[in-house]
Length: 393
Ligand code: ATP
Ligand code: MG
Image 1 (cartoon, protein in one colour):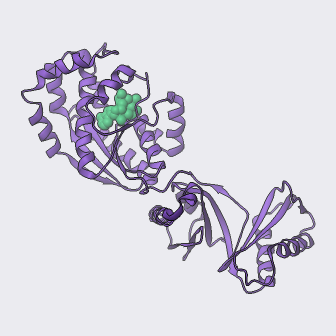
Image 2 (image 1 turned 120 degrees about the horizontal axis):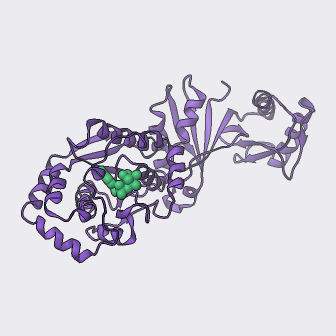
Image 3 (image 1 turned 60 degrees about the vertical axis):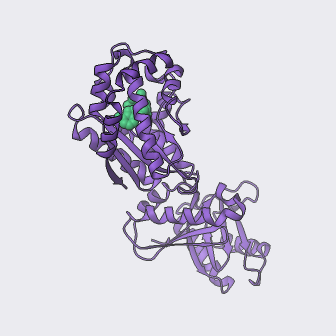
């Protein structure tokens, strides 16, 4: 393998002024985290507006690319060759060798784009462009120069070392996780909530998660499915502390005391309250759900307003305006879809009414909840105390 290093380009985080180093450091940490699961030893360093990943051992090229493609904040990944910046002869030989090995078919147009950060280097950028262009044409007569719309740019950056690269593999964009606080994801086993978590993490937010299960009505396998989903999201977001709440007694109590067409809404309100408890405890500043307007009865505007009413934190619903297919497309891209469609029961579907209210009235709901006054605080307390926390990564 010719490539021993990758140049990492970042977009938005480049413009954060004096805080830039914080963003760079967060990005470097996330890169290191994502490379932990890849065979090999890697060093992640930075140099003025550039982050480098250098392999210090043998490694699988595709595996490293896959890992880097999951790091939010990365806009482009450029496999590069690095050589000493002592003299032009050495650089030129390295560039020719690079081209020969990277491009089997040489029928394309190119432009040399040299940048001289090290002003002590005896040739200026224009000279390097000209001279290198000549040498490329001499060695590979099939290639042609096109200075306006070349097929390929050969970048030669003269810095501490000389970076030679031409390939630009798109990264996921977004902001490095850890630069924007933390939020609590209500993670079910469905398609939508893992996507919602991914989308908020993409903006730099660290994620915790809460899952409500209802044993024995929901199985161990349903729980394992949610753990697997959390692990898949964690490949992008970094480790997720998954809170697994036993919700059975609360659900049975609501079932017993409240009108059945209001079950889902009332249940949802208690889910939000409990998730918010763990959010506050863990330093999260908001909640995240996979709700999308109108998808089901519990996600009409009226229902969302009712659910929202119990929350004191902002609730982020990043897929709110998406159609199901648009959510599925993202689920497939991030690798959660296959797991999400496994057919295990969900705690909400078990206690669901045949005809749930679609326009719940908040005052009516609150009145129904008065039927719960006797035991609900105690049940909530027990649910919170018996919650299991699983670190997913
Ligand atoms: P999803 O595909 O995410 O399960 P859904 O289309 O099934 O969503 P609902 O069942 O109405 O929709 O759930 C709406 C949102 O409420 C979910 O996206 C999730 O954020 C939260 N939620 C629902 N059930 C649970 C649960 N058992 N544990 C944690 N959160 C849940
Ligand atoms: Mg669901």
